[in-house]
Amino acid sequence: MLNLFNAYKDEGKIVQAVLVGQNLFNRNPQNHEVFAAYFGYLCELAGNLPSLADQQSFTNQANVALAFFSENAELDEDLMKAIAEYQQRLTTLIGDLAAEEQAIRTAALAQAQTQNSDSLERLYQLKDALHRAKSQEQFDEALHAISEADEKIDKDALTQAQGKAYEALTKEHTDLISEKMRELEFKKNTAYNQQAADAFAKAFKQFRADEGKYRNQTQLFSLASSTLFAYNPARLFNETLIYYNHVYSYIFGKLDDDGKLALTRFSIECERKLR
Image (cartoon, rainbow, N blue to C red; front, side):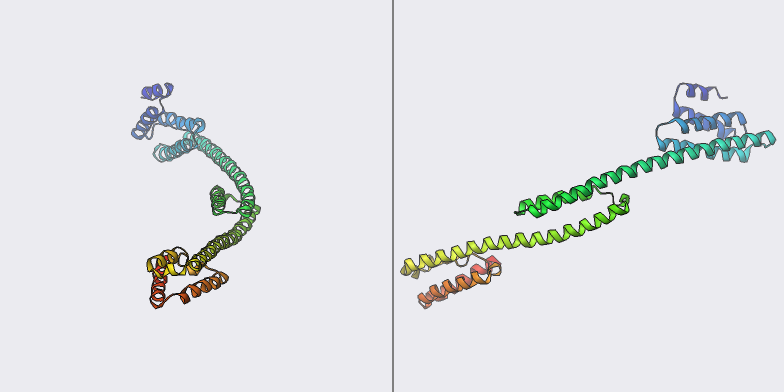
């Protein structure tokens, strides 16, 4: 009855041996010899296979087989002792697997906490990168590096100390990022206002050099659209606006009525495009 089962078992054909053993046992649930062979093989696999998932799977199968055999066998004193021994073997196997699983979880947790320490150290270092950022490109690079380091942190594995450090770092980064954004925006707007002031000065100089030339509305539009009206008033500082108004008022005052109307229309049209 067990010849085919033993043949597959001896040849190391696990899938075939388990299938034949299961088939034999299901058709002979009261046969102690069949059960002992099938149960013993399942326990052997559960104790020797490298994969924890496979070990647990065969342990579960052995547990089900033992319960099924206990329900169907004709029990006597000797068989009760044998079942107790089978149960003890299964209990030991389950305990060993639980210990192995716990060891794996402990090792994984330790590894995650080590990785968390490395990532936290990296986040500390990146504070300096944020401080040193002088351009939008450098700022974006620092933000990208912070995001990468943050993604490597396993939040569930943080120790209490790591959790406090991470919380403090997150707040520091948030505050620093906001501060740096304001700084870069001011720097950008400062450069923008410097360019605008230079453009307004250019318009003033060119108009004064040849006021008659700009009675021609085409010439007036070419000058005003590339200088006076080339910048968004919403981004100009008060000081820049004061100078703009001075230049605009001077040019406006030198134009005839048609020129004044044309300059006004140019202003409206150019400002509409800028917004």
